[in-house]
Length: 321
Ligand SMILES: Cc1cc2nc3c(=O)[nH]c(=O)nc-3n(C[C@H](O)[C@H](O)[C@H](O)COP(=O)(O)OP(=O)(O)OC[C@H]3O[C@@H](n4cnc5c(N)ncnc54)[C@H](O)[C@@H]3O)c2cc1C
Image (cartoon, rainbow, N blue to C red; front, side):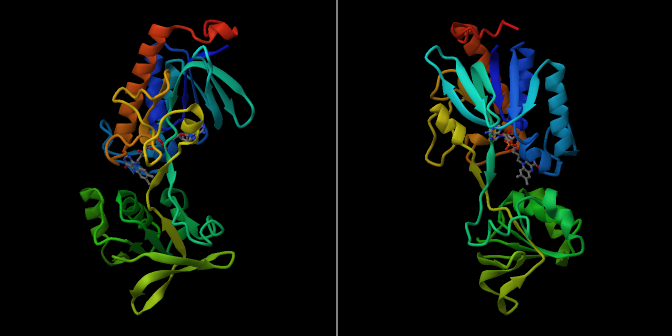
């Protein structure tokens, strides 16, 4: 048995694509290893049209329900390989060794957090060093933390952490913070609770078994050591492109998928959607991910209409049950 479409990734892009493919009546499977992707841990989402404010996890649950109501199958799993056979039929293999066949694929694997790349960082992750304020911020009730990063995610992180922490240092490499004005204004309203250290880098992360302090590139209050209870790193994202490489999809110089405006890749029948593409010059949001998902599903549908069942030659027709 095969599918008309398999979508890899159950974030905003993958689930939006599923809603569209469901309406196109494509026999579709979604496989994702972390339900809801980053949106489910992003905290309140206040810029997705139709919702003044909705928790990211709830937004993903709503999208999932909309897709499953249309007959879409959603499974947990990590896809480790995608190969397009001679007939054009794709074979996908999961970490657990399951094998799936599909006429078209949409790869919507998003991004992962960039690390600072410092010694100790990996070893102390989860032991005082974190990458998700929504997930781990509550551990720091009435404590002091530092957030590293100068983008919107770091400022959103500070605003979320302010619900718990008593004091937050935002360590910014540059001379200004590149955040959405509404998020920046919210941070400013936190007053003395937040202190921004501009033109400052984290040079070292220190601690033996448990995080203790960071060493800064320049003194703050007379010292280059900044002792805080927790460190949150929000310094950008890297594309999760391993599967794209395995599938033979052409990448840009930064490792993001190359695609045209219809989300078609260099591999016929393989489409992409969401943060895995750098289509809007680094502007990566739920609305852009969902839009790309809708477009990718439409392209997959058009491709399937033209090429028909390419897996049938393997005796794995999508019309078999
Ligand atoms: C802290 C933070 C706050 C944010 N706040 C907002 C906000 O307020 N508003 C907004 O619009 N956007 C916000 N964003 C951005 C938004 O979350 C992303 O743009 C969105 O998640 C992109 O969706 P995606 O589906 O492309 O990728 P992701 O959400 O990254 O989802 C990728 C999916 O692919 C899965 N996956 C990866 N590799 C595999 C594999 N090999 N096999 C199976 N599954 C795999 C992952 O598990 C996941 O399910 C925020 C992001 C962060 C980090």
